[in-house]
Image 1 (cartoon, helix red, strand yellow):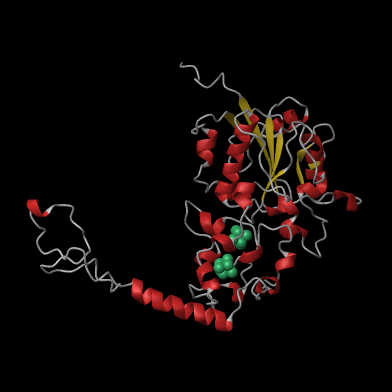
Image 2 (tube, rainbow, N blue to C red; image 1 turned 30 degrees about the horizontal axis):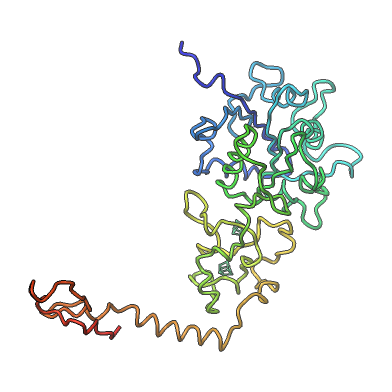
Length: 369
Ligand code: SF4
Ligand code: SF4
């Protein structure tokens, strides 16, 4: 038998806790990542990536009963006992408030061998977060509460930074890393994992995060700043319905005030997106989502102030651009058949070496451009 050539390399564990109040949308989304794909990460296809042992309910081969031969939960117990280091903890779904209940539980994951009772999600967080090298809140629910934390919800749901504290850092000094989105854009998540794997193995500096704990290079710009339709917005050329290729702001797009890179990045392998392909941006990456953006299909009041003055200004801009466009749609006049060269070419030959036939020397091109 051939020895595993990577056996001596460091091994990082990734524990995925999908027991929050969620829909597993982040897990499903990650299977669509291409830059890089989850297979590339797990197989170490990128230079310098450490070996990764992923404990992910979505696709794990270990799915057996507790204390069985392939006990999936045992990795979580081992991590809680301090037997796994380093490990990344990925949290999916919002965190319910178990303190508001007298009995029962909102969400749990496996049973406690000592009591036979379900282990609540918050109990897992209390056991695992002090020992994790870094913690990732995957999706808007885990990051900020999201849809489950809407006004009127019965669970008192919140995001991980609300539960642990916004200033929380891991034992290795890493703040909570939030990768919001509902679901999160697949490559945003896989790229963040790659960054953290490089960081954990000393190949990258501390991950740069913004004030809401999002990776800066992914969430540094607004949807509007990278939307293919921004040119229409600038000219106040707005769609009245969803069958239009114009700017969607009047039918509900929140893009000008939303931090997200989806229009530039596309959804899967550069394809798809939201406003760039005809769907209003409902601000699913934002801490105020969804309450502060509803009803989704009304024109956003807060976005109007950003719009360039409509009416006269927009009509003047459109007219001037129309004139210029009409001109630049035509080729320059010297591109034509005939025995005269009218490009303005100036030959460097002297008279003694001959003349350049047909050249109108010194006259320059005909500037009927
Ligand atoms: S569709 Fe939305 S994001 Fe795109 S230009 Fe219009 S307002 Fe901006
Ligand atoms: S463009 Fe808007 S709706 Fe689409 S993923 Fe980004 S924040 Fe969510």
